[in-house]
Amino acid sequence: MDITKCPFHNSFLSSSQIPTQQQQKQQNNLNRQIFYQKQQEQEQQYQQQQQNELLFSSVILKFCKMHVRGQDFIIFHIDNLRVEYNNSSFRPSIQVLQNIAQRLCDREQGVGADNTLVLTPPPNDKLNETDFQLLIFNSDGSIAENCTTGVSCVCKYIVDYNLKSYRTNSQNNQINQNNQNNIEIEQNNNNNVNKNNNNNNNNNNNNNNNNNNNNNNNNNNNNQEPHHNEDLKPFFSRNRLKTLNQTPYLLFESRSISIYTMAGIQHCITIPQHPLNNAKTLWSKVSLGNPLVLKTSDHHGGGSGGNFQHPNINQFQIDSNIFQQCPIFKLNNNSNNINNDNNNNNNNDLSNSFGRVLLSTNSSYNEYSKVIQCGGHFINSTLVSMGNPHCVLHLENVDEFPMDYYGKVIESHPIFPQKTNVEFVQVKTRDSLRVRVWQRGIGVTNSCGTGAAAALVSGVLRGKNNRKANVQMDGGILEVEWREEDDKVFVSCPSVTVFEGSIKFFQDELQQPF
Image 1 (cartoon, one colour):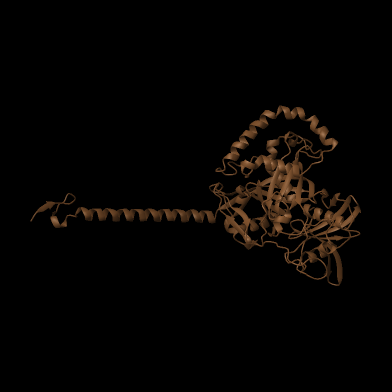
Image 2 (tube, one colour):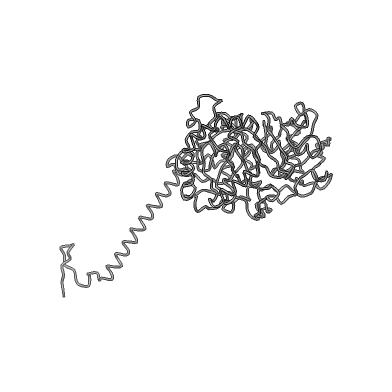
């Protein structure tokens, strides 16, 4: 018998006990499998540990609070939601965003606001038309289709923090020029004087502006990078202004910004030379498109049949985005055609977004007039859609009218299955209106851009006021115009920065209803 000494033992092994080459290979493969299995288990344990840490970690949100005539907003870009322990981006669902909005807007337990506004990238099919997408949340967490004053504040936010547009570069210049022509700004003599006084300052800063433009173009070309590569620099610390009457906007050029909302594409243009701008304030002009006929669920008593197509939460999708690992929120293509347009030059009009009938002075009385029964009372009202529903009541004295009661009753009246905003209007003169607002999902608010627009349109339809008027709301005056040549509505208003801040949420907290 051939005896061979085992190199690892002092005993002798027979040749039959020595592993063959194939057996040795099988053993090596088995050892590798065991090693990889243990490695996978360790990775799974690590990932589970990370998930547990993520679940019980906190989320930091950096935001800015602004207001327009007392209607206040909490504004942030979706990239400003960060996991605290590793500063990674936090990607919430729509439901979590609703929860965050409720907690932020609560005036006793949160920051306090009428609405929460969230900037996100636009849908892929809107990248050649819009700069950003805006999600609008009411204080009760419900989603609003449109908010003119909110769009104005968001545009100031974009300017203040120099946020780069998501729009594809190929059509930037042409579309911006079209938007600039679409919104005509009337410059008064005071504006011209201020502009002439600041020509020298503008010339001195041309080189800096050119350098900044080059940097912005380079940033726009690189869509692979996150939207915010670093924390936002505080607006007030960058300004370093000594008095409120100083303004950083005199050195800015007017900027046209397109915002995609559930009501369609809203165009806003900033007015940096406005004489009432200051260190905290920037005036802007927003195009709301054309007013529309608002249909109710009631076929009787005037008005048109059919429901106002307000999308519910189940109609939202979160799409993946290749160039930006950030959720894009858009409406389901099958949700009552609310997201469909004709892909023409007028696709920013609300009529294309909702597929509805335009309101004009040629509209029939029954298209906008509606008698609403509230208990034993019958109220004659005007129904207008500005991308969101409005019910307008003309009164002799709005300040003495019990709007708290009637606002709540009319908001949730059965003929408005998705509820409605309610405006109480007193015509002072043909160029001046007094308006109070009961806002859907919020209650009484100090101002409302779409409400002011609906009030003006309603007065024009009923022959009570001119096409251009100052609308005096509880918080101040909004300038509204229903342009005669194309029936588009414009609202000019001041956006004011209140403060910047950050707030911490625990993720298990956000999973619980507020």
